[in-house]
Length: 166
Ligand SMILES: [Cu+2]
Image 1 (cartoon, rainbow, N blue to C red):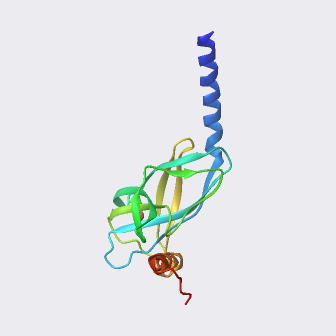
Image 2: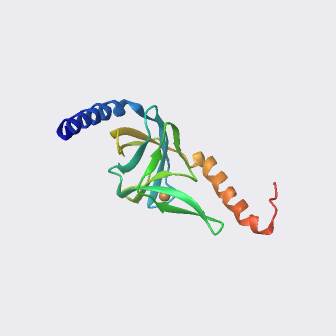
Image 3: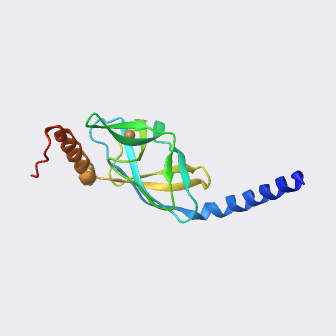
């Protein structure tokens, strides 16, 4: 009785694992061109999931010593980056964007140059590995990041009880 149940669950598990692979797609992966001698870079993208909740658990690329998953969090009114073990990829769209979750490249072998691209492998807990090309965009693609920094300054202003609009 027990044995039979175990076999059935294993089969169901194998079947669902197969279907997960097609549930996740990644669009618009990009990184900002390095400023000067910066030794770190970050990549952003949109992850679409049409299936069950999954997790981004690792990323691999040949452009730096280490590739980490990071998030930003507000701590004492300051935005800080912190390494995370995984990024939740629930059904729908998950945005990796400046000021939020991102893939971080620590110790770049060479600066990111505008117009170039590099392969990145994303590892999902259920969907497995997905390869994407990361397009390197100009430092002018910093619009969102600047917004993030302004947001940061606004946060610091909260202590005084009002937000100035400029
Ligand atoms: Cu980071």
